[in-house]
Length: 114
Length: 111
Image (tube, rainbow over the protein chains, first blue to last red):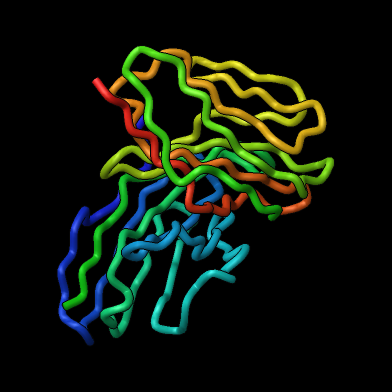
């Protein structure tokens, strides 16, 4: 089966611009998560979708970040306007069901804000 | 989620076994012990999980202390491809299955 795919793999934008990251989970996975790692820090949870509904968005840093998952398939994470501290690697993960189904991660999108 | 403590880094020689320790003295009775790893330039990857009994799969073994306050991830024969950051994570049964990452252990494998 195809794994979790993220697009783009790299993005370089200027401060104040908008960027949209996309995640395609494994087909049939209802759970979708966004994480990010900023330079020198640990991987941090951002939010969790169950199908198209936001289950937990406690990790979203501020209202410049907007995540959507229309139709319960792929998800987008938009940063508008981007700030320097938003630079990092953004990971998406999906899992088959709640409980203890392991998370399957994509290889991430490296975002650089200059 | 309960806290875990891991060494910052470890080294191993290629083709030798590696024992990666994890302390979780505040573990509750319903916490599962999960291990993930992150290879360079990749996303994290699930390795193994367990509750009380030792577990084996094709990637590794998980040895859990009788009091569950510590566990050890065992790679039976380290390869260069096993060089990664290994994360020991406690997952509360009562929470949704988001995974909370700590700093992990950076494993270097020496040829």
